Length: 456
Ligand SMILES: *Cc1c(COP(=O)(O)O)cnc(C)c1O
Image (cartoon, rainbow, N blue to C red):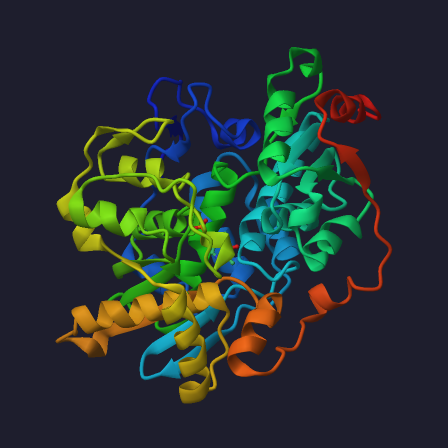
């Protein structure tokens, strides 16, 4: 009854198309490109409207099932979604039809939990079928590592090795990784994030490790992208569920993974009027949309919305592919995408740190709405969009801004602006008194390699 199988192509177009399972376990395509679904399943209006009233795991099963129907049993997929999504997804009304969706109630209080939780469980599902094992290697500057560690914790057939720069992560970020133990091994490297990244890259290229199946869990994996389209459906179905209601989503953006999920949702039929790409002062995407010229920002600027300090978004190649263009691994545009259509669908805006802080202050005073820097960038981006696009037909317009981290993770910044400390959710508060376990390691590949070989 359903559509045909979904296959995945590489944005570099020089690798064969693969199944979801292969794209998930491989990560990067052999030609260095990123996997994208070749045929995106479309959802008829009545089936979209039927999402109303469903809970999150049900919506996730429905949406993801349209990609995976021939690769995973539907009951199994539902069980995976129920097991992964055991937290609330509050959608708060701010004023009129303007809402804030909080994607920050997961185990590490970051929206990255949505993707990582599902990706780990899907990997486990496929690995267990043929009793294969995988070792996930990840370098982190803080947030990604903790989301991956928590999402993959205690999964069978998966060993996780995380490297972090000892002096560059906060105590909370460290504890979110080091208090887990079991299948999560953590290395504190005496070096910078780039050194950690280099050690991981060296391991991937080391042929003497080829008997160990290594994989990465970074944001370019298609297994992290598809789950990020689900909350867009959930938000719309929860607030309206009527096909005539057009949504404007504002997405706080760095590597554009979150946005890519949204674009896939729209391709599937979700009635989205516009996506606001809200960036901090790293404005290469707003400049690109405006001028058609793309230039990386290197080094990227340090802004208070730290997870968005990205000078060359890793998912930009995917978005350009969706609009008929092509970008290679070095970030050069080989074929220009349909810029006119991009400008119609997307509104990109850069928000300064000064404005971000002002937004945190104003939203709290005006609406009692507590935002952290990433969510504030999105909220202000939405305001700029509405200023420039006053809607004549506002009754059918719904605006939803995404909050991607819990304010408690930015308590210093919030204290400076609002003069109080936000309360800490249990998920991250309970880490403070647990015992940590990690190995301190010099920035030396051979030492690291010995650890990979040990117990593998
Ligand atoms: C990763 C992250 C972002 C940016 O998401 P992208 O998918 O990289 O655009 C925004 N906010 C927070 C809190 C994040 O951790």
